[in-house]
Length: 71
Image (cartoon, rainbow, N blue to C red; front, side):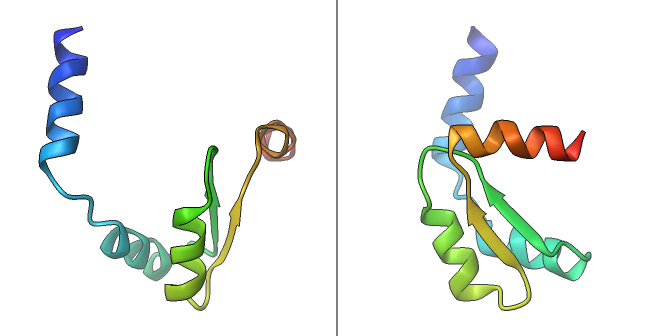
């Protein structure tokens, strides 16, 4: 439990460099961004900022279908 608490504290204390991370993913050939539930905030950011990448927010039901397709 202590490791979990430290990980949570580290994630809160240090900013996420989301745009940089997704830009690198795009440069490395990633063409699809899937955002797991519950929301679509990162999907909207990806659509607005990453022209060559498709971005979709998936629902819990979609997620199960995607896992079957991927498997």
